[in-house]
Length: 350
Image 1 (cartoon, rainbow, N blue to C red):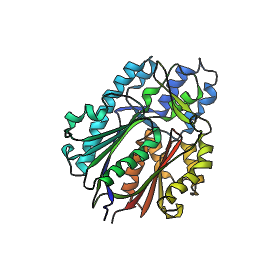
Image 2: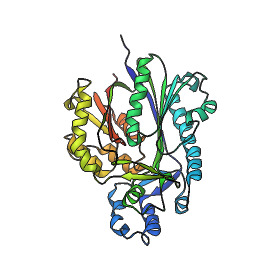
Image 3: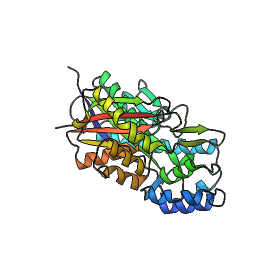
Image 4: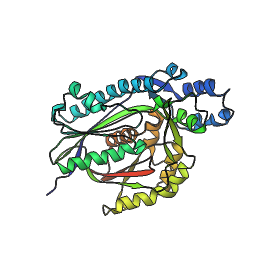
């Protein structure tokens, strides 16, 4: 009989620097208002984003200077490494395990690049074995918190007893661009923050939750909805205005299809745990999944406290949902570049 995969632990961490939404709005006005005629119209996004503060890899003054690829990626390597060690160490400690007991590590990140990857750079410091299996994943964006979790759970299921460490790290603020006088750049400035989360999964008994199923849905001809453009200065946000209506129109049927592959239906889910991409996206998700307005209260509280941190954000939501008490069955949902919807269902452990 195949043993079920269990979530043994979950840890989160953020950089030390804090930028309040009012500070972000004031700095953006200084930097853009005189150069971008649409800024004053767009400035209301800072008030409507539902964000009180976010954590950042660098202090606010850093973002008022010009930066290129080298110093952005140096900052990424430094801060992402610190967050990787912090979250992995805490997650392993919560599970009563040490790094030399990890058989596989899955790392997702789409906001920076290091080669060798972070897991290799930190293997000696953390104490990973020489035969550890490493699976670094780039490019899944906001969906990676769920899709990467699904990848990690499938690896754990394929090797019963193996310890799989899943780490999601994003430093979205390092993509801030002084030279991008565009609506997506202003929205990104108002919306994104930095953070990391780590989970330990293993097929067996115990744990915080049982991983029941995982699946994805790739929407055709949607490459322009979300992603990066890449040039000499760094990464630049691609973000379509059509995302909330697209989510409201397309997400529900996609989730129904993913659930159906596991012989589940929407009515079997007691609580959806959603990536809080923004207040409009959350409202669209509530509508398309037939929820009462403001059902996604944990999601809104995480968005207010941290902003949209891309892939780890849904794991911050999961952490709070676990603290509140998971229902019998929950479904984690996120959307990201592709354009993709990802879903993982979890069962409460008795």
